[in-house]
Each structure stands twice: as C-alpha cells, then as structure tokens.
Length: 516
Image (cartoon, rainbow, N blue to C red; front, side, top):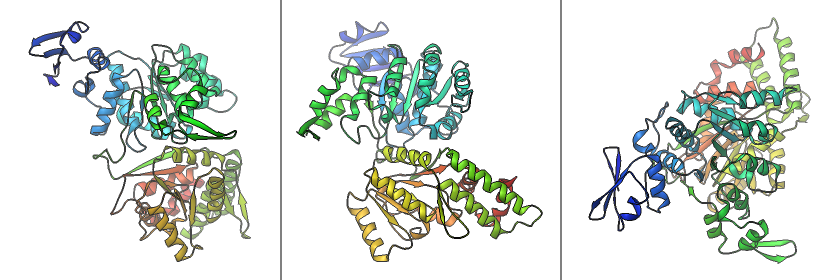
C-alpha cells in the first residue's frame, strides 16, 4: 500500500470490485491496482473490509501540535484510535498513551467528527497528567476539570459539564453525580483512563458509564494491564467496547475461562488467554520494550488529597512553626527540622519530640499507590523516607496479597543481598519497600520498571541515586518514576528535585515560603 501525494492510497488487491463497489471515491487501475481517496471515511471502510495496515489520514494530514514531536508508536496509536469508534488502548504505563489519545481527539475535532471529549480518570491524574498533557499537546483547546468539594460541589461540576470546554476531565465517581448533565452536554468522545475500574459490570460505576453511551459515542478505554488479576476482568470492559465479543451473561463467560474445582475454588482454563484476547478487541498494545524511541526514564506526578486528619495537623503544625520563627532568624538546621515534620504528616506518621510515633489516615495515598501498582506490568520499587511508614505500608500491601520485602538500615547485609537476589532472579517479591538511604548506591534492581516515591527526600543526591537502581547498565525496561504529592511542602521539594536544585542553598528560602 502506497500513499500518493498525501491524497490517495494505492492498493494491490486480488478483487478490486469489492473495493470500488463500496467506495465511490475509488478507481480500478487494472492489474489488481486500486486508487482510493485518502480520508477517514475511506480508511475506515478499508479497515472494515479486513485490509491490513490501512493508515489513518492523521499520519499525513495532521501537524501534531504541542511542545514535543510524537514518537513513532504514539503516531501509530493515534492512527489506530481514529480508525476505531470503540477500542482499547493497552499500551504499557509510561508509553505516552495520554498524548496519543489527545492528538487523536484533536484530529477528529479538526475534521468535524467530534465536538467535545469527556476524559474519565483517577482523581490523582486529572490535573497532573491529563490537564498538563492537554496543555503540552493541544494548548489551542479549552480544558476544564469537573471536580469540586463542599456544599456546592454538584453545582460546580454541572457548570463545567455544561460549559463550552472542548475537553472536560472528571473522576470515576464524579460521573454518577452529574450523569444526567453529561447525557445532554454533547460529549461525542469518552476516554477512560486506567479502565480496569470498569471491569465489574455489576457496579454502579459501570452501569452509570453504560447509561451515558449511545450508538454514536466514540469510546476509547485505556489500561496497560488488561485482565491482570483474573480473566473475568475482561468481561465488564468488553461489554462496554464491543458487547458482541462476550456472551450476554457473565456466568457463561465465567464457564468459558474458568472451571470449578470446589464450591469455593475456580481455576483458569488453558485457553482463557486466547478468549480474553478475542474479547478485548479491537485493541492496540505497545510494551515499553517495543517503544525503541522512548527515553530510558520518564517522570510523572500523581496528586494525592491529604485526608481531613492530615490537613488538620499539617495546618496546626505550620501555624505553630510560624509562631516559633516569628522574629527569629531561620537557620538551615531548624528549617530542615520543620520541613521534615510537615513531610512526615504528609506521608502518614510523625515522630513526637519524646520519640513517640503518631499515625495518620493514609487511605488516599494508599489508594493512589495501588492504582500505580495495578497499572505496572513488571516489578516495583517504592521509596519511603520514614521508617514507621514502611511498616504501615508493608502490612497493608501484604494484606492485599502483594509480595513485598523491606530494605532499611536495620536489615542485615546478608538479608539484603538475599532479597536483592530474589528480586532480580525470581517472580517474588514483586515489590520492594525501601528506605532511600539504605539502597541509594551500588545496588542493581533492573527487574523494576516502576519507581514510586511515597514522599520526597530532600536530598538531590539520594533521589538521583535511588532512581538509578533500576535505570542503569543492564536496563531491562524503560523506567517510570512516579512522585506522590499531596502537600505544598512535597510540591516544593519535588520541584527542586526535578529541576536538579540541591536543597542546601534553597532550604531556608523554601521553608520561609511555606510558612508565609
């Protein structure tokens, strides 16, 4: 297949008539050659005729706006999405799925196929990922976030849904609050990020999304880990994108992919993977290894709401520090102590002057952590700056059936060596909970492709060296670093780290800014 002058496709086929009879803007040139006008409609018809490798005109007729040029796999993903009204994007975490979807949506808006897009995603990435990427890749479009809290929360969401914003971003559970407004608001494209949230067709969340879809709605569902926990997870996703790919009833699908051993135990059938693959079509998937043009390491931020308890004590401590420093000279020492206390509250456990540990509710941060874990296909390093928080996380992760080990100063050299060896050579443990100072230098952990910072370290050297545990010689996969950020103190520290500013000369200034 050739593209001629960016206007037509030249095909070699056995039966030209099956093309010329259904595509008016086509011509039989003889000898099995057919010339077809290259527009989205013709490309979609050729795709429906099962002709392979049909390119979307986005490839040749779109200027790919934004700060960055697209990678080849992003162009191919955007091309695929524009050719499929309903489809899955199963590209791995860290491959730039959001950029691909934004460019595809922008192209469809340019040619008048859609007018508005609704993006449904986790709360933690509404601003940090989606709004940020929309500004990077489609800054000419209008964007708003339909999220609010307080007594007028619903009303504020309704105002945004009913505005003229071309892209509206909303969290999963926000959809049900304003579902009637969404139905009337003219969204002709819905993009669902981390789509595993819709794997269960019996939930209110699933039923709400299904109720706002019409036969004319474009729907792209994105996840890097489809049916990772169980083949049954494919059912709810397939019922939304392509219901014909699965039986009408869940129990029938369950019998297809599982068999009953005892009253309480079901086991996956040998052919389940093939059935799941067929159910989750049409789909495109790129792994990090296949994206040869990807940078070896990328950084992303997930916003985490502090719990009401955390907010209360964070504000109390900040006011106390303001009083303590009033009229006094702020030194690097007391700035470091005050900053550390604010970071401890943000992470979930603060140490009192008497040495006692006060624990805080960390459910919001833990929820975001589990989102990252579920989207990861390989092993994970979680750097946790404070000792007691490591114990809290180990207990929660173990209860949730994740295999994890702890690396910190109190773990002997021999035990550490054994843990590192098993991490690199065996399926378990999948997760390492690490105190940054205990594994920031010299250790190779290249089986991991995801690094999560539960909270920031204030040392640029430790941050860089810790991230280098997975990003080093022998790199198995491109690495994604995820910074969890909930408070202003964390925001400022991460900003310094990502701008490669060492804290020594900036700590006092930063501390004063936080107290103002």
